[in-house]
Image 1 (cartoon, rainbow, N blue to C red):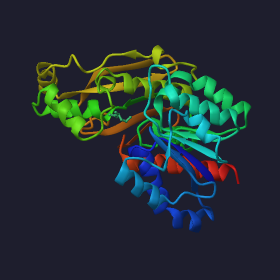
Image 2: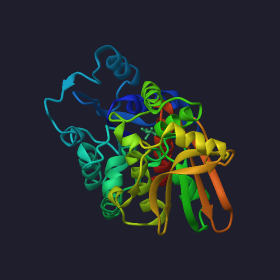
Image 3: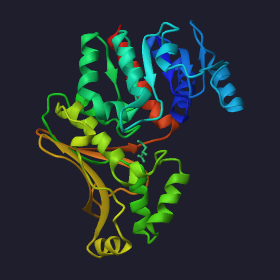
Image 4: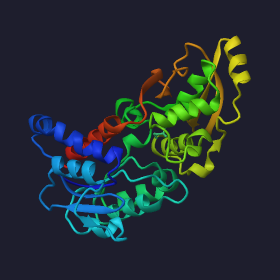
Length: 333
Ligand code: HSE
């Protein structure tokens, strides 16, 4: 299978590393190989119609900050995608939650060209999920996005595959690691601003951390879950959002006196679409600490099913991309 990699930041490089790590695994278990035939970053691109050398591209990026010898000179990614033949677009470029940005254009272009897409880019899905799903269907393409919600936490495939046959009544979860880290550090008496600084140093926060602390990043994930799991044609603009900027040390201390913690909870069901700080009893499945994400899925037959995992990270997010790629490979057999 040939893939084109749009975006070569932390996650994009993680994908290349994982494909190298799993080369033998893919051969042994699926009798298959996944070759990267094109890669683009913000200033350069690199193409080999057969297969790019992963070690070489990664070394070039480390040494020069560029993914290849060709300057983009303002060329849109879509133009570069058309320079080579590929089966799947992997979209990992920086997200644009206002209007979808280049990521949205890339996904549209790939689907319209009959290519399958794996994206961890949240903006395009949170804004245009119904249109993208329709475009995929019209062109006989597969659109996968496991890593867009909760990074390594397998919430999408859990609901679609493992919980098949059940009615999912609601999903409530911690969908932003930055906020959870800040709130957990505030539990230990740290002021908000210092906890935010620490979260940024850990590399979890969005380029603009306002998106994290105002609840917008979590809202984008709620919108994706609403479309994907509840078949609701909504966008991030339909989500009622309250962030954590108004949470004071006094509020955290009062919660603690009552055996509670404050957590930013995203909730989605047939009639709810919300992100807001909530009081959660200590010891509850949603009272986790640190940068972890978690989701509690309420089902009609099995009751609550809880999953948690790392919501961001290089190999963590790339692991979700690998699982989407394998799923596409199996479907296309
Ligand atoms: N900024 C996000 C978070 C990264 O803190 O969870 C993953 O979407």
